[in-house]
Picture 1 (cartoon, rainbow, N blue to C red):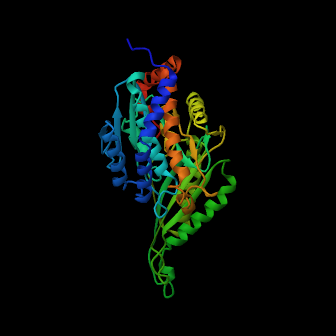
Picture 2: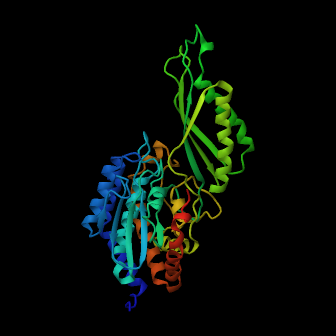
Picture 3: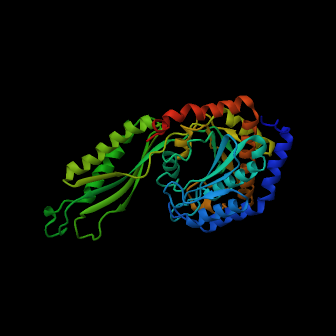
Length: 403
């Protein structure tokens, strides 16, 4: 029989003491990730930094993980309630940590260290999952499909932002790598002998622009041209682009995808170019934040002097945490700090990633997430709900994972 859990204040102080003890190393981790920003699937040094800190803290570290060289798993404890913190650490090409993943990753590491201080007393297994390529192919989805989350009862992370918030959903997203293959010709002497791949992409973009009026509310389409020809006096024989499609949920995403696909087919039909479409990475599902865990996180954040705004019914951008949340009770709050009004995915936002406010965000998010797990583990009804969820989904784990 498990011994009665200590009084909540005792557990709380143990968590806070652990986070304070590692404060310097967590700040150093955040700054190190920020200064040595590595884009998706190239986060080798970033993963090594995370692994080294957890290894010295007594965690059992496995890397690489599930065939992803920059993914990792660090585990502490042997309790039946598995609590996972997802650590992001990939950067944006050319912009560095303009989405604040250095804060995200360090906060999750801090939460794991804080919860480890009370894991044995609460019957918890603490798991830090290093999840690469959130800004690209969706590392969490690949890890989910590989079974890394199969026994996880709770999954959490906090995301850097200009403000504290809880409860928002996110947009489902899918991406394509697009190519049109034409035939080159001299642009002045014999243009009629060519098949203009750039014209094909132009027709497709025009069709997409006209389609936007008929898209369902909440749906978005955006893209960039990555190759458009090499010489102005040669009819382009190859153009490449990457396009993303977003929608409120996976079901609507599938409908919008069909409409956008027809626009690319129109470009091929109009010009005679050959269309090549390849999915880029995995579809991200919409985020479903667990209500009871959100309440616990909100209370924990307020006890630390923060006041997260409820964004229930609103949407953020997109995250592969959405796929995890469809299988595992999850939260994905934002942790805020002053960014001078700058929003994510800008160089201005990245410039605040090592500010005193960002450093405080790392520690506060770490403490709040760990305290959320303490609340869930210490509440018999909540604990049973979470463990029952793991047991219930085991027969159909593969079918439950969104593709």
